[in-house]
Length: 250
Image (cartoon, rainbow, N blue to C red; front, side):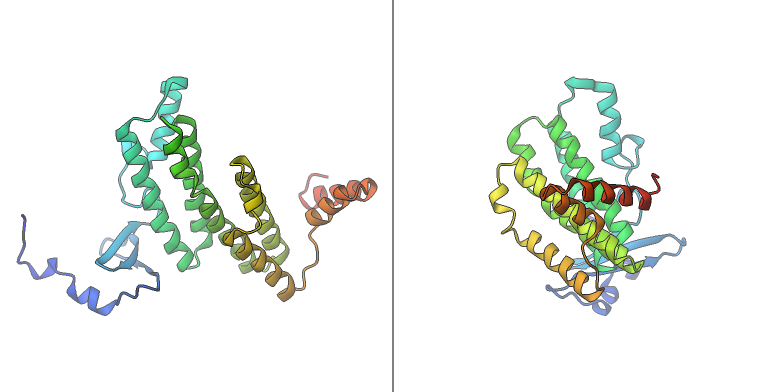
């Protein structure tokens, strides 16, 4: 076992000055002696340090920025015969965990753009897993976390919009996230469980809280959905035109 007696190798002072609390996520961005910013989080047994961009551990698998980038290049070269090997599956799981750790730190620090980016990375990696998984059980072991990642991504998108004083966009972001989560439940024959899901309830509560706090009525997309459901097609056409105008399509 390697050992060292150099005082600089000990991190006792760091740990004692940054207490760990099981109920709290503690994170911070610090700058090292080389001027490089890194993200740190306090865990029970010490401190985890991550890069703020690219892969959190700073590795470049196969010369790529992340293992996801490596797998996408492998898709191109290996084609339809591409099935993840045992070693590749282990590397996928490593990347899932690293991006999870960084995502929750970004949420804690209210860096919502970074949290959305890391959530999108994880969701795309899940898509690759679905396409090239060697068996259904391994696929489902990862797919079960898709609503959780969507929940984080939706929260981040809504809160980022609020920071920009765009309450209606925040509500639209929640609606989009809920739609994606509902599609997941339907895909897995669990549509009847959607309304009772705790994350769904929390997103709906956040949406209504925003609606009340910022005095936001029904968004244009919500009005459109209601008009279509009630077969008010002339109103629906006008609402579609208004949405296109807002999006700069007219």
